[in-house]
Amino acid sequence: MEVAVDVGHYAAEPGVISASGVPEFEYNLALARDVKTELEKAGVDVRLIGERGDYAVLHHRTRDARGADFFVSIHHDSVRERLLPQADRFAGFSLFISRANPYPEKSLACASSIGARMRESGFTPSRYHADPVIGESRPFADEANGVHYYDNLAVAGRSAPMASVLFEAGVIVNREEERRMRDPAVRARIATAVASGVRDCLTREK
Image 1 (tube, helix red, strand yellow):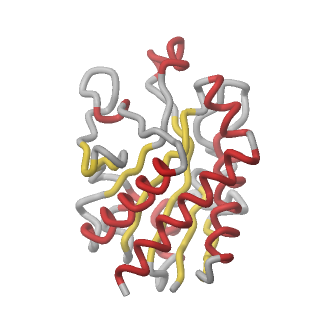
Image 2: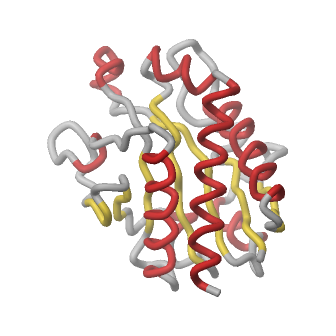
């Protein structure tokens, strides 16, 4: 069993800038490394993608993950620019899958499994992305566990030769949520939940 853990964004385009001015890529890298550690503790082989910050072409990530049983891309969330002055209103994790992926049922099952483990660990799904007015109108695939459809998502779509999920751990433009994401103990809980969800899903598939 092998899982590809993708570090979202890269050095030249490091993603959202957090409330305290830290590039998202730094948060993604720290969490991806912790997820890798937790998966390896569970006996899962891990391929870490993008840790050097040099993956500028999105489909190269899934190309270089070919042969893995599952692909999870690690991110931290933001809100639309016009909502940044109100960013402290928004919090929670989100998961995204694409119906264009060759394995949509497995992608959904694994996303739901991760979301369920996150909830068991005390984390709350965000509802921001499903809102047609303030968010992005991404419909829920599994509302209880925070899973959305995002069919044009590059790393989770048709370019991925395996089941794939994009995971947003928390909203780092929210000052309090960023403080939580910066806490090694919180990050460890998230990494354990993600790794447990992935392991549960892939074990059921066997």
